[in-house]
Length: 536
Image (cartoon, rainbow, N blue to C red; front, side):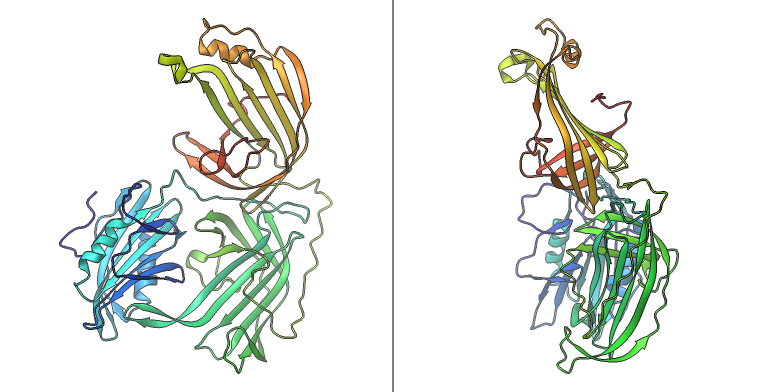
């Protein structure tokens, strides 16, 4: 792939290769090589690389952002990033001059540059965005000199995107229609942003101020929403506290506030951002019921996206009316209550008398997930090495929407001295919380069955049919019931042409056995008609 167009000094296309000999650093889903002599620092939402010549005043900057939710349009993503990263950060910049978009490995890549003025400094800025797999990522370059041209081109050519086998985001649509339901939305979800006071030579100048908001969704169907803004150029601290109830129906989240208030507090005499002054006044706060559509995305961390029909009081103005919150441990909140504040908590919603039980509408629910491996001849079989013997191993999960599951393992070897059909099965309950799947078995059995005679004159298909047919139960043994909480993802694997449920585990388990590549075991979505059906 041609990486840049020489007449356009810094136009470039992200090099989507996945094997590189250069020593690279990785930030979120982008890998890059730091040019010699450059410095790096973490900034809000990205990593910044920079170099400055103190004698001439020349400088060059490169910023790589973390993956963010895409607007759904690669062109719009470029425009949004141009405005956010450049228009809003320098005094003035020309409209971008763009080249034709490129497509590679599922990514649509846009590039453009423009001349900017920042104070008395004039320079050239280049923006590269890549959109794919429901997310977008950007790299922006700024310089006021040509002396770092080679460094910038080297940096651009080193950029690599994480290899995506599919859309690696997890889209979970949990259901929590009453307080007995399991819901993956339970927990703390936060938006924490640092205040920028301005830019100097293209460098963000952080003031120490911040804007924070968060939801804490309790398992009993109640929630707490808080906002705290401590900003250098705003006289007082804004604090908002709201409580109420919530319900989830498919991918619809309804927030029903019961009480809430907004307050302005003076800043502490010490000037510390972690301290409070005195209550100045109450601010107006409207109790606003809203039904959002929502989904979870797996970027650098699990992210909750809330989409509202209109601008809301809690989220304020958001692009495409979509607010983004990341998961955080409930004891790691960065918002504290003012001194003397009395915590209020809404009463949990009453369970409907018509409800017969919890219903789970997470992406694994109501589906069959199956992994199957075929036994093959080993190297000792010479020319037959790698051919199917007729033996097999099958693993199958069925997750029901009522929170119960069935697991079955069935295996038989065609090269065993005394072939037998091994059947192991268990059942129990499961729950989903974010990207955490907890399986709690309640009963299970291991069985061994006799099968028909196997001989070398049979085809692999005939042997398979013989091994699958159980004739007589030989023995039964108790099964260890192993409760495990897995981290999981759902991905589309093009090679298998199916969604894959991947359960993370580093130790052997009763159900999965040894972990596979990347410390996970993956199962593919199938239908009852296509799955290996078991009566147990």
